[in-house]
Amino acid sequence: MTIERAVRAGKQYRNPVPTQVASWTILPRYLWRILTERVERTPRRALGPFSTDAAIYRKPPASGLRLTWMGHSSTLVEIDGARLLIDPVWDERAAPVAWAGPKRFFAAPLPLDRLPPLDAILISHDHYDHLGAATIARLAALDTRWVTTRGVGPILTRLGVPAARITQLDWTESAQAGPLTLTALPTRHFSGRSLFNRFQTLWASFVIAGPAHRIFYGADSGEWDGFAEIGRTHGPFDLTMLEIGAFDPMWADIHMGPDGAARTFAAMGAAGLLMPVHWGLFDLALHGWRDPIERLFSLEGLPLWSPEPGLPAEVHPGVQLRSQWWNR
Image (cartoon, rainbow, N blue to C red; front, side, top):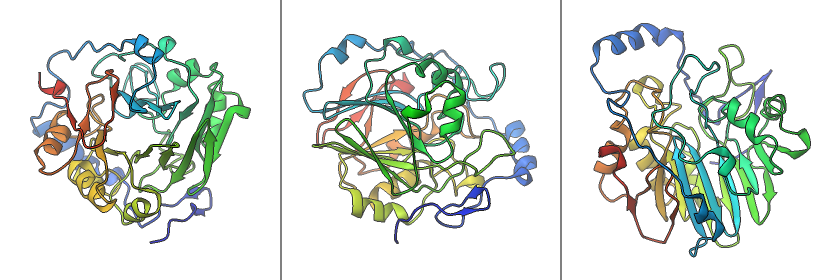
């Protein structure tokens, strides 16, 4: 399969392969399951508190690669002397309003004003659990580069980010951020910050390539054959970040879940370590909040790298990290 730039039909971007996105037709089944299924969708007890010691960032990682997972998909990446913040959401809710919608399970481990200097902020797409409006408005004053996908730039400028600092990428296009090359690649997902503007901005995964290390950030996606080609063309990766949460058979085309992440990692060549993201912070599906990580941990043969929220951890070849903070 050839990885190509995005195609638009009118105002809407199209997925790289035919994809079914959940619609209003599933609402009766969705509501019935909410009312009848007894699962722990939100934690019954308080989680954390988790706290990041910002003093750690004064010293670069000895390995050249260190990540701090803040929950869900928000991650601070230190790679080959550069720092990159991925899909920052410090907002209380992943929603268009502050008084309703999915509420975070625990407070952000590190206050925004204690972030270390950044070489770039990366936004994979415009959904509220990846682009927090209040978070962006606070980060807008930073003297840093913003890299995102086609059409997301105007959202950032409305939130205060200077247009001159924003680079918008199509699939297969790249941008430089310090020593890093950031390359946008297709995923099988969708976009939109309301019911009326779906598909009008682009969504993407990213290769984060430094002089000595390479990471793949899968963002949000269902399974598709293109991941194998991405692995062949852009790998091998030291760390592959794949989503495992918010999955359900009703929307399997756009969220791969833990089993899909395991298959995708294998299809990409199974090099390096697999880091599960997009879980553990918001109630965005019908499964129990622990289900994605418990299922992933039960699968044999996976070289997992799954840290505690807010804990800066270095990545070493072949050395797994299996924190069970969620089970304490």
